[in-house]
Image (tube, rainbow, N blue to C red):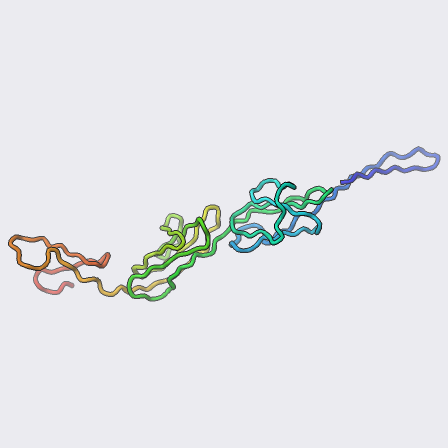
Length: 232
């Protein structure tokens, strides 16, 4: 900042009063790309100063930016988490710029479902993955949109596909925007159920017996007759 003072003189007259004006030099605020808001992780935030000789400094914790804060990286700032970004431009002898920045809310990509949509014979498993650490993948198997009240797995875990279903999955992480939904459809044919087994086995017994019936196929129901006819 500079203060300019001036006075007028004229022969045979007293000097004028002193006129004063203060001039403040202030660099314009930095320009950010992309703008703040919900952003899919991956892009690099770039910052430029219309005043090419100013130094940009920043914070990611919503605090006031000072000359003690880090210099903006030449390569930009990778967006890999939710941040409250603030920047200012500084130049020796000048007033610092106004702050610029905003709230960048990170968004995970939709999870990857390892088993593609299609028709399958027998039990299958679908592996759910995401590149986002400290996250959970919530899913549904009834075609409804997943919520944080639905079951979840961590990245790399599997969901059992034991029937025809529509599997939908979404990534959750604290302070992040919800991911888009991944969806697949399965038509599953499990084939015939395992034949029932009898306990005790067939044979001759001297007393009345109670016979237990079971099948190795989970969820199978067992029908029976006692007159030699085929169950149906």
